[in-house]
Length: 250
Ligand code: NAD
Image 1 (cartoon, rainbow, N blue to C red):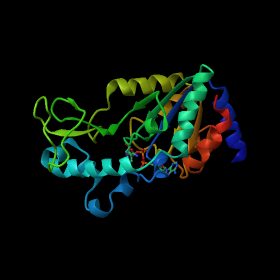
Image 2: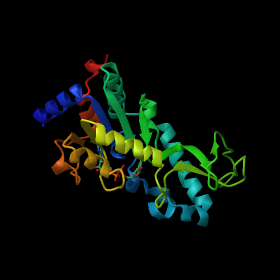
Image 3: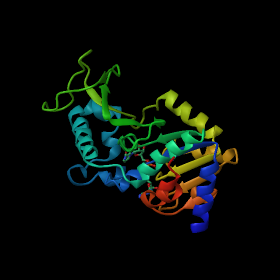
Image 4: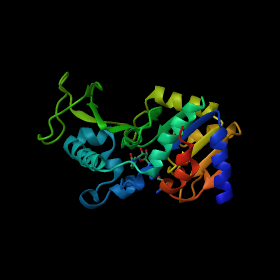
């Protein structure tokens, strides 16, 4: 492991173009459960597919709105962890030596931005933002005391979280930017993602196809593990600070 880690750290240190893909695992150490783990307590009788779809919202807007309001409250209470911070540091290190850098996240929790990451594509949106269901008008604020989704101030359509639900398309420009960067990079770092959710799962494959160094950080094996140039088995909060040590900060 130490040898693999040293090899990965060296590749990152000299890369001219770095892409990082993150999933729910990087936020686990901040106390945000992965999707399946989140369906506990109050919400244990629901399945994500029953709450995170446009059909579910049409059928029962109040339950869906309340579920997201509950998740939004939990997200507001947690802090980025050492893994998020190491990636924000990597962005600064890369910029200081003129290397390209892009962080592509499947997470909707906003913790990368809270840690200081700036060059970022949020493939699945952000739970902290809200837009209207019919027209996508963004809402900067909304009344929280009324039950269920408040109406859009512009068109009256119900407000919903600005996230990509099951069965919805990803924002095409976000996906294109991620794919372009994955095809261009010389180091691709995949962190805390099961590699089961498309199209994000195809991004490391695009880098692999071009023979680039794909580095994986995940305590559990995934479909990518055997194909990765370096697979680092462990929690992101421990491995990432060793890949991007504090002393590398310009
Ligand atoms: P996933 O739940 O399918 O997989 C999580 C992965 O993280 C697993 O492979 C697991 O082994 C790994 N993991 C667990 N703890 C880890 C740690 N400490 N360090 C590194 N890795 C760790 O997540 P996914 O691949 O992101 O796909 C699930 C979907 O659910 C995504 O679309 C995502 O948008 C959504 N989601 C987002 C959040 C969030 O915003 N924090 C939370 C739950 C679900």
